[in-house]
Length: 339
Image 1 (cartoon, rainbow, N blue to C red):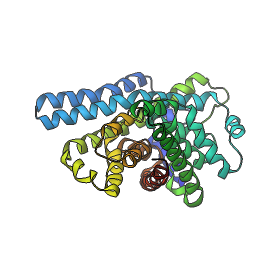
Image 2: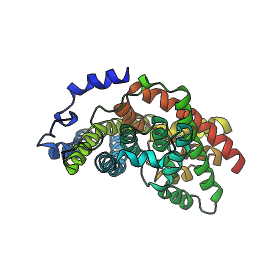
Image 3: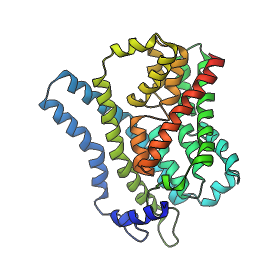
Image 4: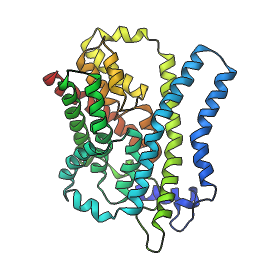
């Protein structure tokens, strides 16, 4: 069924998506428009309506977009480089042949790649296109933005004198990524997954730099729109929900965990900065703040939008729901022991 979806999607794409097509000559203008037009539109709307709520919405939306855009560029560039320059045999040599063993190896590989959740989606899509089992690609997708050195260092700075918080975040995030990879092996179905319909891998007789440009162009334009949609949704929640709601949930140990998990999803804070947001939530327990830092890099509104645009809506709904439940469970178990 997934093959039929991919085949049907090809005629709707640009010429760059077809194996023998060439990218449109105006593609640099499309990249500039994707980066500038959403922000310009928000600025114009904000100038025409001077309400404080709208100004706050514009600020949050622009901050989420600007914060995530560099990492989206990094991820799409890395995805294009993998597609054009890295032979498929490399992945088969690095990862164990048995998928059940490839999942934890791919999850642990997230430690060495500094990146945000926006960068992990196109990279995971490129890995699947190169023959990596989806379970391993999804384990990497979840772990890379959560346990890379930049994030762990930021967590240590945000929680000085609390090395157990850093260790708890590392273990809970890695456990969640591995568990979700194994869960996909057990219950995942091909018809839920709709990878982006474009050629992957180097084609003999074609320029590798041209293929890199084509892949980068496709992934950035495709994911950039969904990033803006997710940022708008996050900004809407930030403005619509009053701050007094935070105080209503902080008194209950279990409700505070669930509330901060939901808050992490809708705030859509970049993983490199979420530790500082968590440290500022002093009214909540360390366990609730750990849950905030574990759930956020794996499930938020902009990430759900990116997953839906890359892999399909059916996948995004099921995968995000399961990831949220597993992340909360791992945070509670590991945080309960260490914190």
